[in-house]
Length: 332
Image (cartoon, rainbow, N blue to C red; front, side, top):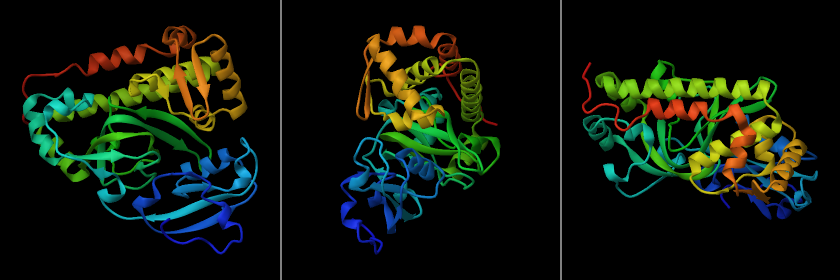
C-alpha cells in the first residue's frame, strides 16, 4: 500500500475489497478518508466527479449494495505519461488495430508512428480530466473508455464510449484545450499515447490526418445525438440492449466485465431498474449476468430489442472510416 492511512480506528477493515480507480501504484502520496453511510453508487458518483482517485470499501459494505463506511483513497497523481499508462514493447504498422489509425494512408501513418507510445490502460484510469488540458491523446487498441458529462450538482451520465474505433481528447482537433466532460477507462486494455503538441503539429501539416480526425469528431457528435434520442424515446430495456451491443462491438468478446452499479450510472437510471431489466434479458436467454460480468448469449435478440436505437450509427461509422480513406496524404 502506497501512502499512509488516516488515523481512523477502523482502517484495518479496509483493503478487504479494494476497488481501484485507478491503480494506486500509479500515484504518489496518498491518504485515506472515510465517507460514512453512503451507497456504492454515491461513491462512484464522487469518483466520476474527479474528487477522488480511488475507493476502498470496508467490511461493512461487503453485504450486497448495503450501507456502511466507504474509504476514499485521495491521490495526488504525478505528471506525464507515467500516470497514464505503462509503456509497452515496440510495434509496427501490422500491429495496429485502431480504426482511426488504420484509415490513414501509409505515409500519414508512417509520420505518426515514431511519436506514438504503446501503453497499458488500466481500469478507471482518467484519460481526460474535466476542465483540464490533457497531455496526451490516446488511440485505443483494446478495452473500453467512457466519456461522462457531469452537472454542477454532481449528477453524471455517459455521453459516449470509445473502443478500438476511436480516440480520447478528440476535442483538441477543434481548437479547444479543455472540455467539461471526463473520459476514463472502463474496461482495461492498451493503446497508443500521442503528445498533444505533436498531434496538433502533425494535423496542421497533413490534411489527410486532419480530415480523419474531423470525421471522428463528427461521429462522436452523432453518437451523442443518438444517445440523446435513445434516452428520450426508448425504454430502459431498449437502451440497455443498445448499450450492451455497443460494448460488445468494441470489446469483441462475449464476456463484458460490467457491474450493475456502473450500468446504472452509464445509463442514468436507478440500480434497481438495471437489475430488473437484466433479469428480463436473462429470462429470454439473451444474456447471463453474474457478479461483475454480463455474458452475451444471443446478440440477435438484443438487436431486436434495441430496435431503431442501434444500427444506424454503426453503418455511418463504416462509411466514414474505410481502410484506408485515400492512397496518399495531401499536404496543406
